[in-house]
Image 1 (cartoon, rainbow, N blue to C red):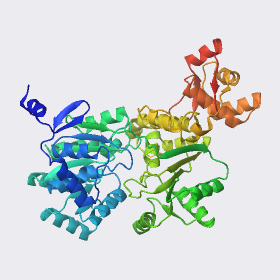
Image 2: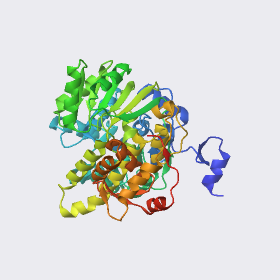
Image 3: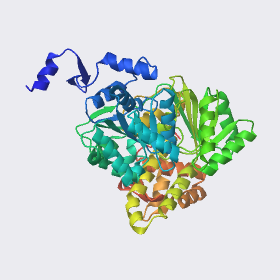
Image 4: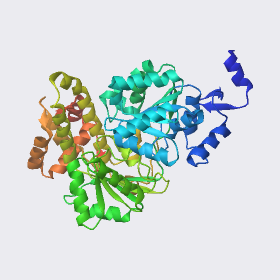
Length: 525
């Protein structure tokens, strides 16, 4: 038996994790960690998962932590800096997120700063002073800053002082092309290993399916990391997903009126944010917009309004909310279909952080996936030919993620169960969502399904829109029903759909088998 293992067996204080026992040396005793938590943040208890990550970093061990939205991921790297009286460098994807984290830390009397392109001269001087007098505890960087030679030299200089406690990569799923929010600059974060050898690193994310976790570990070069994955299930959230009416204003106003606390409304584009905030204001609701196209002062005012007013209503693009500390959000409402399950779990997870019941509502239409697919293709056209080739696989993946989200929204089963399954987590029905409450009845779709499959027979692909128009003309029923049925047959793998967003359909081998020897197809629409 190795000396370390012998010591672990002989010591009564161990940490139980994944069936292994580990002696807790190399970090302060638990009572000192709890005391530091109380002294710096005013909290008496760690949230689930936080202590394990803090202990791993203080022991010099790399860590991958997948903790749900609202679980307090930022404390996992902030507390080690305070305990060791050193510095933690954090990579974060959004300037607004970094600035909000810095403001929160400073309110607790903790020296923090962020380094980004828009930093003015005075703040740069203050940052440098904090580094010189060793008072700075947390330094936030955007991933793009690591491509700047001056920033790399700064990291090397900080590392040389021996004060670097840990490196943290927030929103680590951005490193993976399989993730829902891929950022190319995150791919280069493995360089941190060369710049700061021997420093423990923690990668944090609210959602990361197994394939994304594998990418994070590989691309960040995590060394034998502690892997902590907590359930994304939120027992205080209830999900509702329904088709958006042609004029959804009344439905939105009713949902806001029934909500407690703060309300967060997500629109897909900046233009939609402006339009909806204006419409709601004209209807007598004091809604304010927030998006990246606003000037910094206006964004700051909107953020402060959302954080300080008793019942604010904010209309924003989906980037808003990352790291924003508002616990009593009673409603998160999406005005269109979310782009992915992973992204939706993060966005909806901003509701009910105080543990009280909260509602997550999605209003969607079949046209949402078409418009989103068009936007994705249009964005790729701005790239060079070589870049478009590299982007093609990513675009196809995004289309599959979008199709999976649509399947959840149109599906008859438990919303929460379907969302969690999409990120690799098995869970029983929630008994809180709209589908669990109404138990939709199953109907026999065998005959119309055969009509859809027959229309695709012959080996040539058909455009979804043209297909449903022809079916509605030949067999009756409305186009929306035929479109839903065609999408359902794609989910059942009787039909194959192109991954380029053009919604071309082909008959699969299983569909051909069905035409030869049908079986019952009972679904609830």
